[in-house]
Image (tube, rainbow, N blue to C red; front, side, top):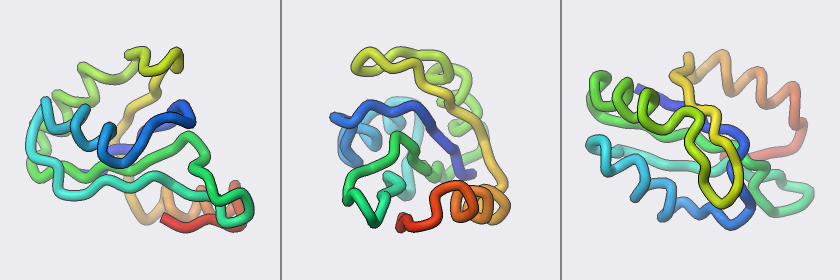
Length: 95
């Protein structure tokens, strides 16, 4: 199950995000969405967890939590439709 995270602070790394979600289950991939123009991440990430029930638990526990002064928005997504929306929103990005 793919989880979408937004409102991440600039200090968040792939490793720190993976460690955060790994406390709730098995993480199979973690990616920060990177803006090609600036080279930095845009405060959004995708985390894929192996088991749906673990992903739901992570969403329940982490949505609204505060990390580095930022209130996280954590939700499940349809990865294809979300990627399309992000392409339209950001223009130049890679993940």
